[in-house]
Image (cartoon, each protein chain N blue to C red):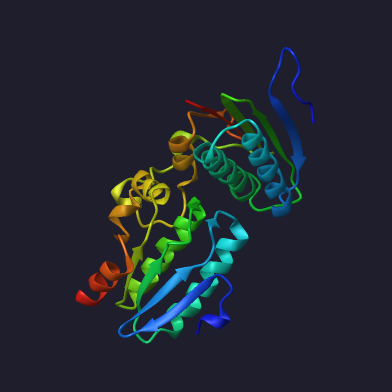
Length: 121
Length: 142
């Protein structure tokens, strides 16, 4: 599945999908749009709309990227699915705290806890 | 480019560009190089990059309603202790006090409207100059 994506690495696992963002900086508007379109495909194709979004490669993101995450979260909730973020670094955690999106988005320290959170729901 | 002089040891640039993405990126990248040359680290570079990105996106998206033919003016100065950035568009401006608070409970799930909040959080000072089509920001290195 991941071969069709330029900005994502996608692994379909039992009961959920792990999506690793491959970009170091998610600041550019065009890039954010492209990532959003690829995430739309993942959501549309996923049998189970439970997605772990792996931020281990991501160092920085902008407010437009936050918008993309909110849209993704809403879309998954509309399909009775869920989203969990993992491996979010300190800078990005700070962005989530400042914007209070840590109250909207489910954030776990690592993939194992993210999987457990999604599958335990 | 005017490089440092005896009386003004800062790196200063001024650009007038359309809303093309490539031109915005060139300005950001040149500023990032200047910050690095000034010996300032990754935290400063990230804060300024984020603020410039947000300000230019706001200028194009809101100030010019996406019209890339309209001109944006960008001014930057960098020295070892301070970075100043101004972004001015040709739009009518906006009242920052009228922008909904994106951290209010009822606005948390709205996908847009966080740019000014992030600029204020990461830069030392942010001022929206009336009538609201120019934003001036400073980062003071500690």
